[in-house]
Image (tube, rainbow, N blue to C red; front, side, top):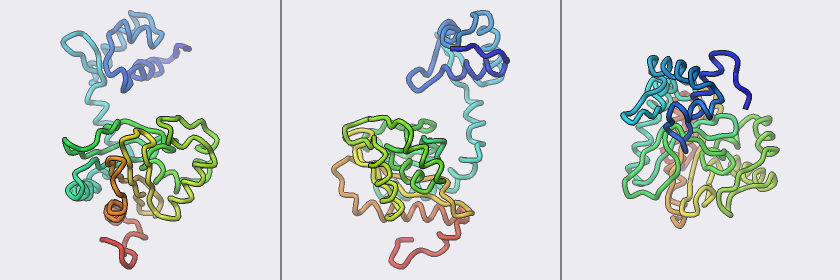
Length: 257
């Protein structure tokens, strides 16, 4: 790994050491992973701690600080979205008592910005702030199907990570799935991330009627989705209406509101 020359580059490299698999690290681990001298790491880490970007526990290990979470909530992709969506997510949760999720698209990844989950709901790998490839997740497929053509083509050309034997991993299968989502207005991701789960997702539209996010419910893989599709689509339409989407101002005939 090439060591960044600028101070900003070195700070970003240090922050990049932290991942879901490694939520904390010692000073020496940070130094080694970032490719920086221990003295340089010590100085930069102290500055990050002072600013609140990093915190330090009683064992001397560093972790991401709350200041970064505060900044992340100001992202244009999430600012106001979570607040507008939460009442609809809560309604969806009350109906199902399963995992209800809200996500935005970042490149070819679905980034989860909100999640409600019952204590006895099926286990899921996501959490707020985590990301999954769009080709394998319900919310990702719901957004990717309506993404600009260049984004879809990039997804079709890029390697597709396999999570289970049922994960979409070929351009032909992904192209067929995206066409189905556009036709139906919702996505079903069946055992693509974990064999025990199934996700039903629907796109959320913004003021220009473009898709800006997606909402999903994750349930055990053997649950009948026929009763889930209408409530997930209703939640997506409600959020879209609050966001000012012209197409959501009046529900289609026979659709739930």
